[in-house]
Image (cartoon, rainbow, N blue to C red):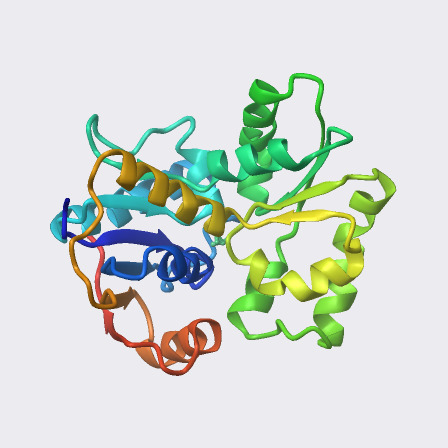
Length: 269
Ligand code: DGL
């Protein structure tokens, strides 16, 4: 057993889609979350810049002595396929491989869509990982750069007309290409799930990378006998790199207003 916290990070609030799943399936684990809100978005930046930011995110968790680091950011997960950020022996997971595994298990017609940030789509990482499992899969990728600002500004309700117009435009290609499985390859996007699923229809399976990474963490920590021995609900500690007020509002919208956790501002080095 290991009672240290699990570390989870993203550029903003998207990685909370991983935290909410962790709280469901590993309720006794302590979690430390970092949202690098001062530098969001990551997904429009070069891979070199994302790599520099990711190294600082990981250094933050090394200082906090966590037992596992989950990169709850599709962009960093894709970039680190080329630029590794972890040392040998460090327990970590990105969201890309767990999401791809779930998509490959789910597809029946081998036509898989991936919506993600521009940096993730440009990296080609999702396609590479999918073809390692299904070599003749048809992959349809689409960058959706306006989704992250919509989410960070709370434009997520099912009836939000602005979000609906933008989503319809981005997703038309997925309908035209008849995908039966759609990876919401940026962890912010599942916060638009209602809008996305209304457009794609109930026959298309939507994959949430944060939720899949949480399931992977459960499997890995169990296999390695590293689950906590705590019997009470785990503690949640949240850090952001910009305004605590704005971050708190967003966190409450996503995790519920009774988030039983403390929120702090930190400076990354
Ligand atoms: N949530 C992030 C991702 O999964 C990044 C959003 C961004 O910073 O552009 O890619």
